[in-house]
Image 1 (spheres, rainbow, N blue to C red):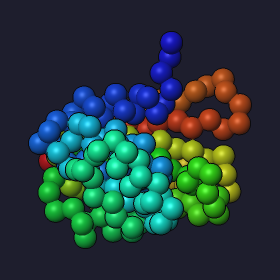
Image 2: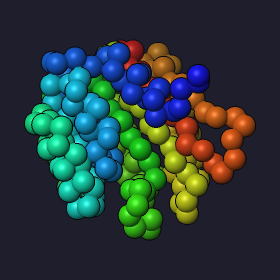
Image 3: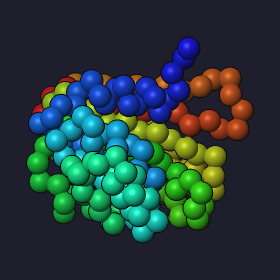
Image 4: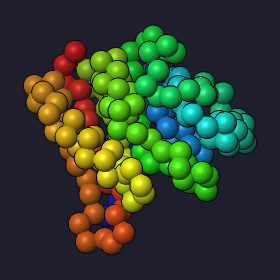
Length: 183
């Protein structure tokens, strides 16, 4: 069976993570990616601007006895204030928090700033998975901005791939995968 984009994003990141690595969940949401990353990495920094996301993620991590994640109530564009070490893997789920206020969304300007900062701190061989949900107001603008940005990354420094359903209705989410080749 063909993997869904979110499944592929996890496989893509798991290949490079180990118990000495640092990972970033740039959009913690309900904590699914934070919990996933914490199973592989030494330390996970998880960001969200909504208290509800932080509370749900904390509950999820507590129920799984996960203690190696730092939950940060701040925008991902401010990550350099919290992360000083090299990053091995990062994930973004762009859009809005499921079952919450759909008017609070990720936005192109802060997302591109966060991606730029993560790429700067990413180790050679490190990877970034960007899940793009764009079926909401403002989603198309962010999708177009991220696709434009990633497609212009220097091919000598990065490999960028797109994994996208082709025959699905209702603007299904898709995955952008970036791997850093050189520092």
